[in-house]
Length: 505
Ligand code: KIV
Ligand code: ZN
Image (cartoon, rainbow, N blue to C red; front, side):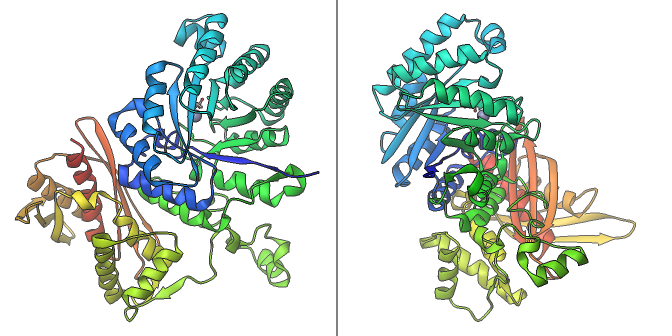
């Protein structure tokens, strides 16, 4: 039996961004879109253009700059939303309008207050309207898994007749169970057998079943899966792209679906980039991309592996981007070697950003003998923060820590005009003191909601990655920074977040 291509629809930039605290700026979204294109996904859902001017601009920019992949935008089933997607994606090489309308009884009765007939009519009308702008129209009956199966079948047929090329069946609230969901998908697939449309699925992870449900759907005939890097998304998240791809690839004997167009070696770097830019850490035991995914602790397992890796490994770690040794550069490495390594990792930096990253690399190489890929990824990612338009730069930070003495910090920042300002503050701990000193200079008083340090590399000179989440007048933003000096990295991460607040106020 010939394998059918499985369309990988990535919604990291839309549903993924709906994850609390995961909002990204335009540069960060553009970089993620670039990485997704390199990974080889078929569709990038770049945003929900009507949601905000920022979302509209971001979808437009991605449409202009990212080629060779379909760029989709989300729209409710109303003309205004569809107009916005059509406009935002007009410069895309390939564009898709993704229209959604809830169909379940709960949503019909309580949210929309509409009858089945009204829903059918609105869905078909919206799809037909979207087709005026674009041949590639997708329709999602929101909360499909809780919709009466017969009504779902009717909606599917109506929207296909109206011109939808893809009908996406979302398990919006993560309610589905694999066996049952597979049967539902089989019914939907059979109902449009004679039509030229793809059935897709979009599963949420409220019961931890998003990947399992998506895979049950693939087995039942779905030909598109909507997923996100690291499984980020609304509430408990969406199906994790890396898990879907590797399950279908590893068990091709079972799924008989083709994901050969995905460059799996890029899965790990995509995961790291998304984690870094969103501030959402990847759990250690996460399949495929977690730090422990290929770590073998037990003696019995290690013995088996030494005899034959297939005893305890079903995936070769290098196939998804892990390298046995990623020691690459040191203090004698030049700019050329640095650029080569950046490019090998899938990044592209030029102009001031490259100069800046190289300066930071040299500074790091002075204090750290061996520079690993992780170090380089962290350096490069620093360039996708709001650095280009930064209002404030950290010049100096000094803290005192002594048992029994209230900590104090002195911070020097330069503002956008190069003017250096200095402040001293004391707080509950050295980090609190630094944050307060920064607040004094910037005049933006922030509450530190979340603070974490994880080591990105090994050894006592490891790169510590600091993530902070701060709040000011109800707005929450993330800031990140990695460095061998975690106190300085903490100041940088906090300043990074404060600058985001300032830039977008
Ligand atoms: O979860 C959902 O139902 C969605 C739709 C808009 C596809 O995200
Ligand atoms: Zn969703």
